[in-house]
Image 1 (cartoon, rainbow, N blue to C red):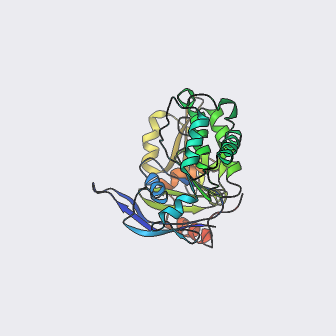
Image 2: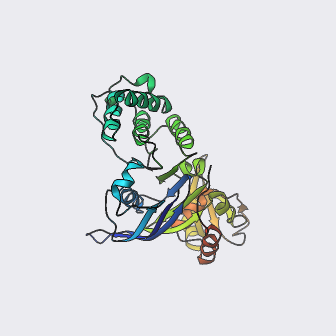
Image 3: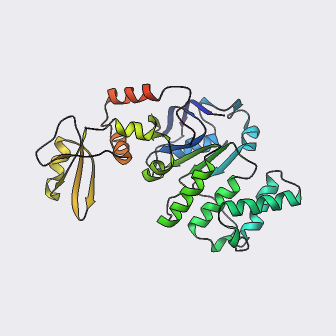
Length: 311
């Protein structure tokens, strides 16, 4: 099964063009949708989750028309939105059982067995009797994944799932998502570059409602090889570098300003060649520094029956 999105567009009444002719084909495994806040990611996620209508375009999950067969979509969809409410005084076990009943799992023993299995899978079983209001942020996110897994979904959508998590909880969540993504489509929407670099073998960058780039992250990053330069510069000279060079980013390292620049030739004697990473690709893309030839080449290489690969 694959997810095919074709020329989806959405304009809000205030004039904001949230999506502009967005097209993607996504196969089984983890797929990362990367973009800054306001890029249109949540609009796309809500559209695929049958929560809002686009102005135009189409989306198919296998042979299911996601815009017209919404009940069919909901039967095979698991969704963890960016913000979701929980009843703080209800235990994890009881609320998960309630969600399972809403999903149509009516038989009591089947429901109890499923709830226990999901709590085990998300490492929440020992906390099953705890009120959800006492859960940490990471535990709440893992509970969100548990409810998204009810009904053996074929597509799981997770929207900004690791924002606000501490490093240990982020690692736990990454491990959970990676295990889930072995057999189904998991669409991960995030502005955190490391989420995509750690988890996804296929990705796309969305910016200002437009799909900028898609493909294998490692292959796309490799295309920047030989074109990235770095130097430590005084703070007083940063503005001048921004004026005359294609500055990808300025990072603080040990209290010093490390400037990373895109260019076909060494920008100056103080610069040395740097190894590119996904963050460099991301910043260069949203700043419009890559050039049409790079983008066209990337599109050609990513073209094919799918832009994702099994893990």
